[in-house]
Image 1 (cartoon, rainbow, N blue to C red):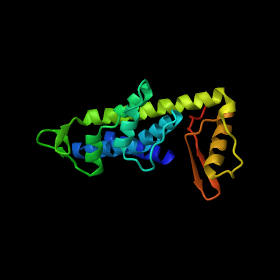
Image 2 (tube, one colour; image 1 turned 60 degrees about the horizontal axis):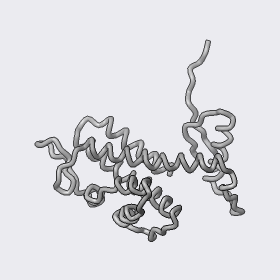
Image 3 (tube, helix red, strand yellow; image 1 turned 45 degrees about the horizontal axis):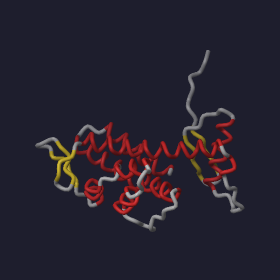
Image 4 (cartoon, rainbow, N blue to C red; image 1 turned 180 degrees about the vertical axis):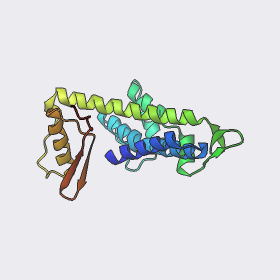
Length: 195
């Protein structure tokens, strides 16, 4: 999740920093692909499993979208399904997109698409997924009995989360955590020196 997040931030930064529309188009398509393949896919699987449904291993996004859309009376499923536009995803997956400088538009599979609309769709999908993640975190925080403590060995991710939790409890803000072998590096906000 951290790797996917970092990639998405870098694509978003590239979009805002690029001078040429063609490069903006590449950055926005990379962002869109990363959001769908990481956030939306992962969130959809979790939501469907919470509803007692199973998602076949390696199912294409179109199948995931169809499974979500089939869940009548489940607004979150409808929201998630709405983020998966197969024509955009397929054009992106097959590198069948380009910037048309004459008409000033993005072409996805030969069809025009508004660059800002694709960006908005990616950001909307990220927001939907983050909303669910935050909701689950709040549910666990308010009901500790939901947390199942396993006897399995702790891995570095679990240890990093423990470090972040301890920092949070101490009201010590951490922007990022990085590992270099057994060395753990915490990136914290810089504060101006006070006289």
